[in-house]
Amino acid sequence: MIDTHCHIDLYDAPLDIAVATEQERIETVAVTYLPSHYQLAKQNLQHFKYVHPALGLHPLAAKDHAREIPLFKNFVKEAKFVGEIGLDFSEAAKSTQSIQENSFALVVESIKGASKFVTLHSRNAEDAVLKGLQSCGAGPVVFHWFSGSQRQLTQVLDAGHLISLNTAMVATAKWRDLIGYVPRSSVLTESDGPFVRLNGCPAKPSNMIIVLRWLAKQWRTTIEDATRQVAENYKAVLTESVI
Image 1: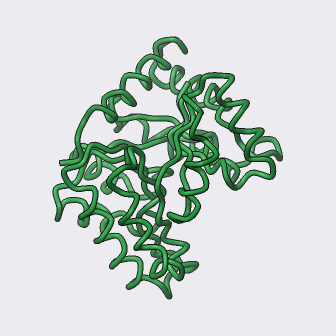
Image 2 (image 1 turned 90 degrees about the vertical axis):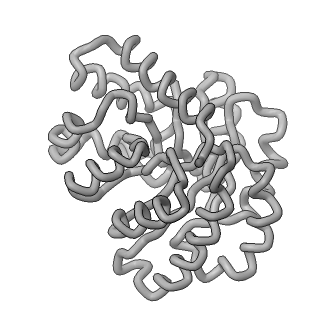
């Protein structure tokens, strides 16, 4: 199984989650909010084979960007995984929109032409994120927890990007409708734990089986085939350069 977006460092017992995920051999992208968090994750996960630290510059942490950007620039060349990055134009982050836009432009420019797996945030900012990626010719990237319209989803997919689904998304009527517009080759799985909760508990990488069962049902195929398809999609992104 594959979890392309998990905040392992934000669980109550992050090392326990990381060890369990490693033992279960679940390919997991351990996203971070800031480069200083990535620095710690890199140290703590250096001997892990399946859990990969990702270099983040989260839009909801925009007030910390000025002091963290030098660290981002320092790490971006070596980081194979980048996330969580992006834009958030919701009420919660409206006051930092200009900071976010400046940071995102810097991040997109820095990943242009590099071979990296990128997972990003686009809440209420889908058009702006897509425009920023297109302006630098960056892609393919993964839109995590995509919450935009069908029109925006089509534009994201037409641009060659992918979307990742979590247990909260597949429980909605919206995604029962939208999944029909998404090519199988453009789908990945994510937990977004510990933010997503399942039966009152934080979602974990092992919960990807729930998403895979849902995909198998929507695609009218077996869980084995759904698992194989997601694995192929993940490998394809890993081998494609951000151009």
